[in-house]
Image (cartoon, rainbow, N blue to C red; front, top):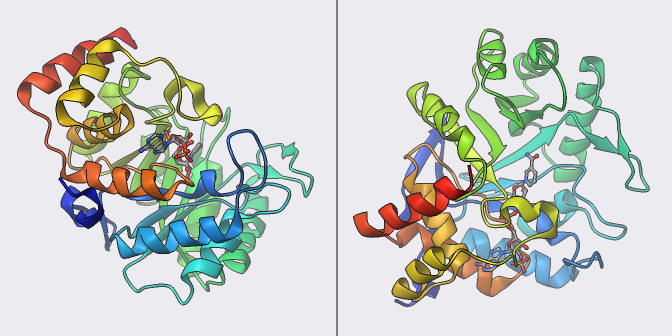
Amino acid sequence: MDTGTITADAAGTWTLGDLTVNRIGFGAMRLTATADGRPGDRDRAVAVLRRAVELGVNHIDTAAFYFSPLRSANELINTALAPYPEDLVVATKVGPGKDPSGRWLPLARPDELRGQVEENLRQLGRDHLDLVNLRQNGLESVAEHFGALAELRDAGLIRHLGLSNVRPHHLPQARAVAPVVCVQNAYGLGFRAGHDQFVRDCAAQGVAYVPFFSIATDRREAGAGGTEDPELVAVADAHGVSTAVIRLAWTLHRGPHVLAIPGTGNPDHLVANVAAGALRLTDDDLTRLEAVHRRGE
Ligand SMILES: NC(=O)c1ccc[n+]([C@@H]2O[C@H](COP(=O)([O-])OP(=O)(O)OC[C@H]3O[C@@H](n4cnc5c(N)ncnc54)[C@H](OP(=O)(O)O)[C@@H]3O)[C@@H](O)[C@H]2O)c1
């Protein structure tokens, strides 16, 4: 298989509100720094973003708080892609914030969310944001924060709203306030299997499930590179691909509402990740991978 000719539409599409995206997207968090914390190479990051769009990626995940001392994900997206293609959906998230030195700030109050939305608008060079996820942290109820975002949506600053880092009970709280087009949560093969039911519940409600750390799994910000389960390695070998690609293909097999947003600063990994959308796992593969998944419970 010549992976370089496979485009993101091979994964199929999903509609976020009224915005149709290919199910293989791209996460921008890895563009700002290398795994050991050095600022990412600017030209390479810009090239990866442009190549992603050439390969049909039209769902890019970002945040104003994705920055390293010398690089900002939003600025790189703006530089690489503006004027933005009409079909490109840039999803951002608000709630957390960092001071200019990169130190985390407390979760924003509802009245502070407007400033975070405007920060994203300025950095991306947009007049409205396609999709804003409320990334909660420790809230028992998201209703008040989501209500503040719903007002910004009504004011035309935001087209669609989603949730991130949420537990199942947060979804009905938010849906009582305004439509929710997606849930963006940490999830993957052998990682947070306890969320399987939530993934299914989102499907039943027509809400996209957008897993992050689906390659990195429990290594989280440290990225890929852990020891892989031999069963997963065997499935990868049988297809002649990396375990990262099998991990992506597996998430896409969890349902048509699952949208992948793999993060990479590596152009070869980008091509492989887009090609994962064309990989069809067999019933036997899925049985073997289910055993790997269950071991992650
Ligand atoms: N809502 C939230 O709270 C939240 C939190 C974290 C992340 N996110 C979003 O989710 C996106 C995905 O998460 P993530 O980037 O942390 O993790 P990820 O997609 O699970 O994995 C990224 C890691 O895997 C490596 N990788 C990617 N493709 C690979 C391939 N084909 N072969 C081998 N290694 C590969 C990357 O390194 P290389 O750069 O070397 O490829 C990086 O170390 C982020 O970019 C961000 O947009 C959201």
